[in-house]
Image 1 (tube, rainbow, N blue to C red):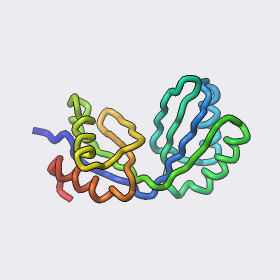
Image 2: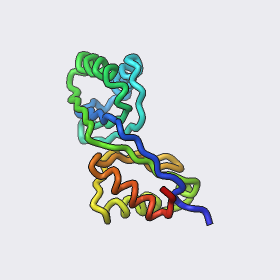
Image 3: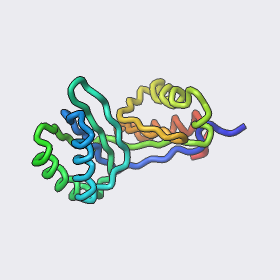
Image 4: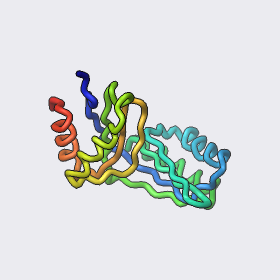
Length: 156
């Protein structure tokens, strides 16, 4: 029988960029991502939440892009005036995955139950067919990795 989760990986040095009060118009969203691209900011995770008349977009990226991100933030503030922009370095990214994630209802529930039972809060979440990625507080790094590896019977 194949394992649901075959691997747990992580990235320590990430920045979370949170954009709030983003207008709900595709051309504005395109402009935001164009500015990030033009400033050579390589994006990892993207998630968005619709909030009544606007949206919130959360992005993660490697800390090595900090200088580029600073330039992008200046441009974003100039070109999309109503944006509220915040960065955060207190998180740690974890990704769990395996071929069976695609075919197993409740895969995310199993992962989040492990985190919940160990009082590990998770924040931004993105998924693909075979991967569930999320960020947790840096202080929970070792506990999260240990509990996920232990629960899915993965060797450290």
